[in-house]
Amino acid sequence: RGAAATAADLAGRHVVISAGGTREPLDPVRYLGNRSSGKQGYALARTAVARGARVTLVAANTGLPDPAGADVVRVGTAVQLREAVLKAAADADAVVMAAAVADFRPARYAEGKIKKREGQEPEPVALVRNPDVLAELSADRARPGQVVVGFAAETDDVLANGRAKLARKGCDLLVVNEVGETRTFGAEDTEAVVLAADGTETPVPHGPKEALADTVWDLVAARLGRG
Ligand code: CTP
Ligand code: CA
Image 1 (cartoon, helix red, strand yellow):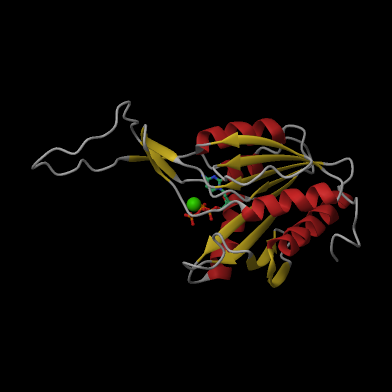
Image 2 (cartoon, rainbow, N blue to C red):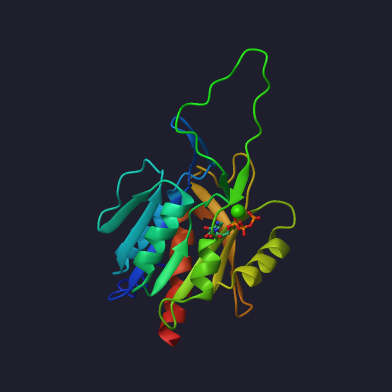
């Protein structure tokens, strides 16, 4: 199935999508970041609009143009992303966490730019854990039957890691990608397996990020239909 066969199957639904990658500031000019481009999250937003949904897109540092028809909330850090996603999720039918959320942030923010000093080694950067937004959304559903979807970029034992992560997070669906330097991050095309809490696995062949997005919405729509 694809968008053509399922047009408007998300009509009357509110879906929340996070996209991009959080940045965790060290000082006014530096941050810890990641390689997420936001393209997969934006593809999810465009396809959800095309299928009739009301879409809230929480965009972390993407620099991409706002998708037509979506409400866009821009955020920087993981803490800001959590706030924006939880607020939008309160009345959402589905939440898709496509953003790469930093696991850690610097323990201290330096109000002034960190300077190097002659003959002095740099201070180590102490980190603290960020909140796990996906685990929190999954554990405390804002509404009964709300469908929660995560993404996982894995290397090595990709499917085994994905299954363990799905169980640990408690979400309904987990989209698992294999990553490398040039695969997935910033690329136009992707391939993935969508793992479901009910044990089903949906492989998505190499293709545009829109095709993966439509498969995600097919699986979400099926679960909303049951609720
Ligand atoms: N995620 C989140 N909050 C975090 C970290 C991750 O909501 N603090 C979400 C991501 O948006 C993604 C999913 O969790 O949808 C999986 O992210 P991933 O980094 O693969 O999971 P982690 O539990 O952080 O595992 P790892 O140690 O492999 O990074
Ligand atoms: Ca992580």
